[in-house]
Image (cartoon, rainbow, N blue to C red):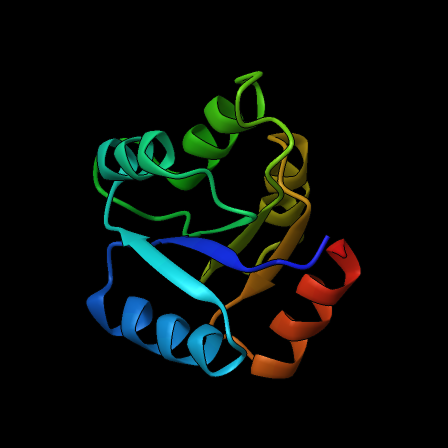
Length: 121
């Protein structure tokens, strides 16, 4: 299944613009959310093929949101890749335990992100 629709969840407008631009150049449709509440609204509007998730956000953080989404039967099949500045191995392990299928540290390397996306196909 080719990934066409991506939801990017990040509280940084700069990061949202960077990732949106990167993914749109690959021909993907991108929707964005700046927090957990907005992410759930976007999910209910249209189910994405992939979610790129920041960790450090106001309110519910990316680990909590990943856990909530991956345990919801309606969205459990949507792969989540964590895109975060948290670069400790314990953070990566914890993210994967919450249901993430991939973990990338910022600044995001476009080639690494593409490899993670390709690995999901």
